[in-house]
Length: 427
Ligand SMILES: Cc1cc2nc3c(=O)[nH]c(=O)nc-3n(C[C@H](O)[C@H](O)[C@H](O)COP(=O)(O)OP(=O)(O)OC[C@H]3O[C@@H](n4cnc5c(N)ncnc54)[C@H](O)[C@@H]3O)c2cc1C
Image 1 (cartoon, rainbow, N blue to C red):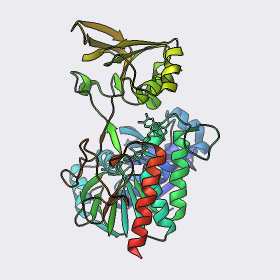
Image 2: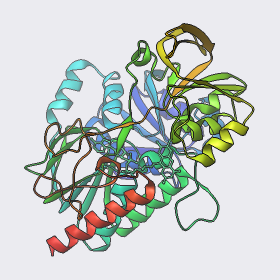
Image 3: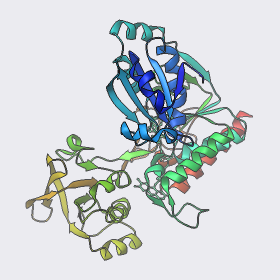
């Protein structure tokens, strides 16, 4: 095994892990993209911290009893130990290097941690194209570039797939007769791009991006130098700017039905919004929740007619048209209150609910490159028909760029065009 990592079985757990002064244990699985994303970081950190901390790996499926005993239900999961006792956080899913380092440093004296930090050598990696964003646009660009034998690195703070990975069912991506779970499409696209030869740096911290020099620093240690960059960073939910929204984000207020609807089995939910996302996601939430109240600012829904028809036919859904939320309050776990205003009369009332979902449109993810690009009036990057932006040798693809329709198909089309256009320039 590369690095200073020892593979163990559950029978060795007490003897090896619990007897160590400081230890970290990685429960991994096979065919697990987040485990692969972790493996290189784990290996590199074992070389840095391995003299002070013991690094272990254990195959989760082959050691189920121990996994159950330690309440490990996902792969990868990292557990940290100091003098045989659990220490720090339990990390799981798309695990970031910075989070691992934070927990490793809890296991050793500060002066040792400082010395290791000081000997961490920066790494420089050269490639021809760096792609920011591993959503459908970035992965497709990476696929085409790799197939054209162009050395490409795709960088993403999350795992591959972008929004597609969190979409419950995708029924309009060509080639599949049945609707596909978004995470499966994300898996196929990620694996296909990797198999073609593109390198991925996922679940990383994007420390800085210099578009002029074409340099991207990842996890504070690796500088990726490219000749061209494709920005495919997508967009994020638009906050409403209502009192309490920021405070209770992720703690009573959610922006992702696929991620959170399952927690509302038999519960009451309020949905804010009336466009396609709001209605489609409400229909998904209806599989779990007992009731859904849709609060919408206009007198009619903005969603497509098909979605509207389904929503009006769903008995669990009721509507409050021409109302807007004014305050969100949290009284406890699964106990939220929404103060809404009736826009015609200005009258306010308070609605008690178990949870709130907000679907109020999106904003482009541009905060890493303020004032760099020529933007349209909605703040999206303007490109020419080959996806070139106003910055030399920087392209944009997918939801981040100006366009009429933001879909997986249009994102993959943009990624294709950007990649082919670059391939022609780099010959
Ligand atoms: C709830 C919902 C349901 C949807 N359903 C469908 C559907 O059924 N069919 C359909 O065709 N479309 C659907 N869409 C739209 C579709 O998901 C998007 O159009 C598509 O994902 C856009 O792809 P993208 O690659 O441009 O961006 P994204 O999918 O948003 O991916 C962008 C990636 O960039 C990463 N990123 C962000 N900032 C940085 C940074 N600074 N550096 C590096 N990486 C960064 C993000 O982590 C993300 O992985 C849906 C969207 C939503 C929100």
